[in-house]
Every structure is written in structure tokens, then in C-alpha cells.
Amino acid sequence: MVDPARILDVRGNTLEYLGQHDQAVIQPIISLVMHALTDGDGANLMRDERWVLLLSMPRWLLAPPPPGKTPAETLRTRAHDFLAGKFEQLWYAHRWERKLPTVAAHARAEGQSEAKRLEATIEFMKLAANCPSWR
Image 1 (spheres, one colour):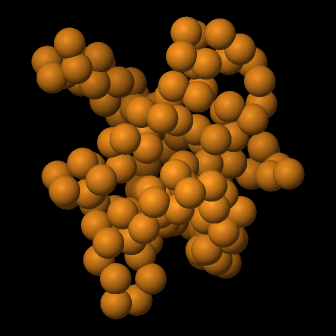
Image 2 (cartoon, rainbow, N blue to C red; image 1 turned 60 degrees about the vertical axis):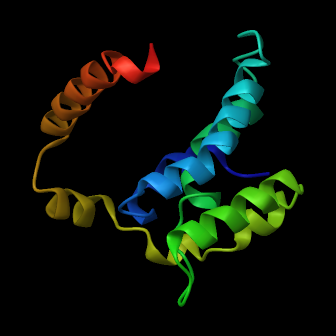
């Protein structure tokens, strides 16, 4: 079982950019994960495995591609593997822990305090909530 406390460590080692084609490749997987999270009707949100699935997506879906592969190729393969039930293979495909930054290194790289990051996150959430294509 994956340690839920480590799930939040995943952001520091993901793809830095998703093009339109990349987004189209992963959209069905994101929809399936959200459906699984909510049981299709919003029920059972407090079950740990549902949140592990959602919060672990950067690790098993959005990790950088292997050398010689494009993001779109890699995302397509990962989506196929997810649908084929190759969950453990997806989890261990990327040497995640070896590349995670420390909290101090991350703060230096970000160049902003946790309070500033929270402000930026809130502003992004406001933009996302007003996105006309989602309505």
C-alpha cells in the first residue's frame, strides 16, 4: 500500500508543460479517475483509496517521459496501461523518490513564501472557477 502522507510530494517531479494533444490524451483518464473518486454520484468521498488514486496521478501519469520518447507518446502509453490494469507497473515506472526536491530546495527554487504560494493558488482557483469552457 502506498503511504498516503507521501502523495503530496509528487508535484516537484512532473512534466512542466502539457500541449493540447497531451491534454486530449489524458482527458479520458482524468474523467475516469473523477468518476471513481465520486462513485459517479458523489458518494463515498472519505475512502482513502479514492484520494490516493487522485493525488497520485502526477506520479503515474504526469512523470517526465523516458529518454527518446515524447510526452504525447508516453502519456498515450500510460493511459493504455491504466486501462489495461497495469497499476503497479505504472507506480514503479519512474524513479520518483530519487528526484524529489527537499522542502528548502523547493522554496529556494520557487522564490516565494508559502503564504505567497497560497495567494497564487487562490487566484488560480478563481480563474478555474470562471472558465467558460467548463460551464
